[in-house]
Structure formats: C-alpha cells, structure tokens
Length: 292
Image 1 (cartoon, one colour):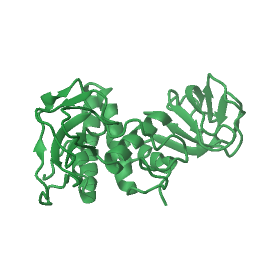
Image 2 (cartoon, helix red, strand yellow):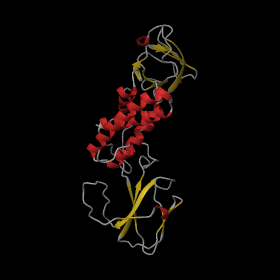
Image 3 (cartoon, helix red, strand yellow):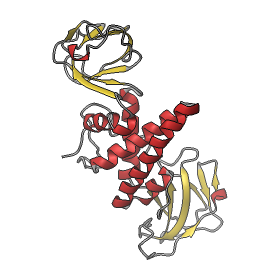
Image 4 (cartoon, rainbow, N blue to C red):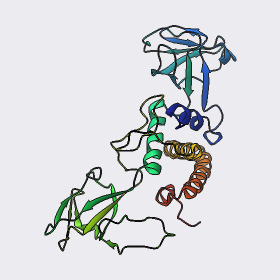
C-alpha cells in the first residue's frame, strides 16, 4: 500500500540524522483554542526547549492546522500559541511538534523526492517537417530547468542507464540553441520521423505537480489515477537529505560543521538507495557520480 504523507514525514522528521528531539509525536490530554496540554511533556518548570517549534495537528477537530509555539509551561506540559485554533484542543488529538521545519516544509521535501524518483526525467517533442523553431513543452517552459537536449529517431525512448547500449543514435543539441528557455532553435529542419528529447534538471521535474498536499496524500504520477509506492527507505532518505541541506545553509561556524557531517552521511545513504533503484540522475544530483 502506498505510504501517506504522514507516514513519510513522521519517519523523516524523527530520523537519527536529524538529531535528538527533532520530532515529538504525541497526543494532547487537553487544551483550549490557544493551548495544547500534554502531560507526557512535563519536565522542569524552567524548560523552554519546545518554544519556537511548530505544532501540527493530524487528528481531531483541528486536523490540518498548524501553530507556532510562542511560550511554554513545561511544569504542566502546556504549549501556547498566539493565533487561535478553529476548535478547542481535546484529549486524544494527535499532533506533531517539529523542531527545525514546519509541516509545509516537509511536504515540499517529500514532493521534491517524488519528482526526482518517480516522474519521467525526459520530455519528448516530435519533429515537424520544415520547422526550425519549437516552443518548449510543459513542464520545461521555465528558466534553467533544462539540463540537456538531444535529437534522435522517433518513437524510441532515450535511455539514461549507462549500463545499457544505445539502440538509437542521439545527437546532443547546443544549449545556445535554446533561446531564453522558451524556444529551441534548430540549424536544420527535422521530419516526423525525428524527435527531440529534453532532460529536465533534478528536481525540477513537473514542478506544477505536488502529489503530497495533505496528511493522507499518496503518490499519484502525472497523468495517472492509481497511487504507486516508492520504497519507504528511499523516500525518507531523500527527505532527510533535503532537510539537512536546507538546515546547513541556515547555520555558520562550528554548528554548521556538525550538521555538514550528518548531511554528507544522508547524501551517501540516499545515493546508494537511488543506485539500487537505477535512478542515476537523481543520485548524481545528491553529489555522487554513478560509480564511486
């Protein structure tokens, strides 16, 4: 059964490489519209560690709502937020308390991984007799989203697997022929027996598609109606890597060096798992070549 967004995010946000206490996954024992009380959180009265975190409810009458923790009273396990919820927090309402990122950030990490692993990297455009200028096809009509372009025989597929011999001669196009990331200008006309294949840059594959939008979202590829599964370890590893890349950029000094070590370990783990799936391009994007 395909993993839901909630499953992936809980696993990624609590991953050991994210550090201790990166995620608190619990249920409220009471509260109001501006407080969440959880007696399981009770520590010392002067403990301020949960302050500044993001609280996301995934069950109960406030499911899908998120709030920033502005103050805490850990002697009673009380988390306070300034903006009121739609309803009072009730006992048994499940929540996630994120240390580094909010729910929407983790959804973005999940969608980036899904695009890198599950969606086709190649976009095809059939040749037209006598035509020299081609409008770039969706979803590539955005600046900087094209890594390479080739011309080959229609209707064969371009293989990015370096272990397979080429069945068709593919000719790389000069990137200068792509004008303003809007048009491809050819020096010689093609015919209907030719085709152009564009390779999108990772992770700019189908950027308008976000399979994971809600707690129970699952991965449904572009143009399909049935959800699919990607190995959970691959999805989680990719999300952790993207989270650590983002976290490292926000730090300086010794703190950054510590998180860089975790980010490099996450990158290697993710690349190894991608190689097992045969997704070479995404592995290269992580920072590792095909053979290492």
